[in-house]
Length: 235
Length: 224
Image (cartoon, rainbow over all chains, first blue to last red; front, side, top):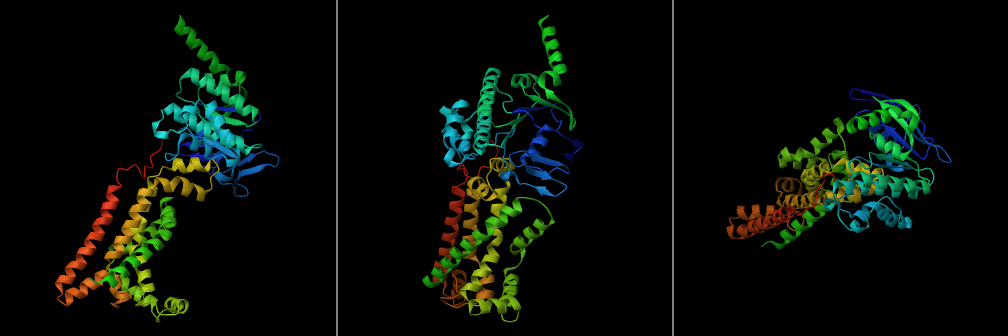
């Protein structure tokens, strides 16, 4: 995919091979733009985005002019800003993208994200962290109900959360989505989060893919730097 | 009190409001959803009745709806009678004249609904139709109310267009404002006073409805 946005020129090419893949890179490197292009919220200048299901689904192809609108893609996105519908409760927000036949998934999501007690609350009563959890639960529940061939995009899903809670939620989410066979592409600039997920990592810099592979290989340098910083602080 | 004129005015205002909401909702959403020369031109055309003398609009409509033009002949054929000096003609004139009063509040209301909500709905698989009715409209209810009330009251109070296109036919095209004009012409100030008071009461009540909804929490479009 190629795209020019402001001073940043994107030239990105990658395949998702693992159940959970992390786009890793510094702020402003274009990670969010890539997620938005996959979700169908923006049209790249050139390139091709294909979702491989039983039958490949072409989301975008500049050569043929194909562009599948966001709502027709089997892709769900939890953006950085929660954007919870203010006229709906937490439960109704999560149920928004879930067909009524799969209503059980809403209760499951509420439980897994520790939101059962807040189910009937309006979004304006929630803290920032709670809103973010609802947004991820909403996108995940919807992606799961699509079934085979869906893709869940998470843009810094638990940024700013209390670390123990973040770790617990990430572990739980990974287990849940793994069991439901829902692949994930998430964005982070947090080395700890990438290692915790043990995911395939696509390292991103200035709109380009620098490296792709297992987290231990791709982020070895960042990990060493972090450990060195910590040991220096201990001394 | 000219009850016939009052009934005709209320019937005209209610019908005009219903027609205008059907037209204004998609039109305002289209205007608010993007930028470009096309939208600017349409918005200018919609706003034109705000700056045009009503008699100018009335004159053009009179000509357009009459037998001298092709659209006029077509409409006459379609309705089975000439539209000028009829209730149907009055309805068309009122709808055009009050169009900006129905569209502008909705454009403003839709404009403050953060795009993040629309994008969130789309990435949850909601079609544009569902997104509009389940996300955008609930956040724009205050604008919808303002739009409906302004369209209604503006139609109640219109004079120039009605006179030009409808004339002054009791029971068919004579609205309250025309009746008031007649009463003053006849030096019947007592009747004119009552008619004017009815118009003031209708307008004031409508404005109270709009302002009492302010701060009720409806129409908040900020992102949370």
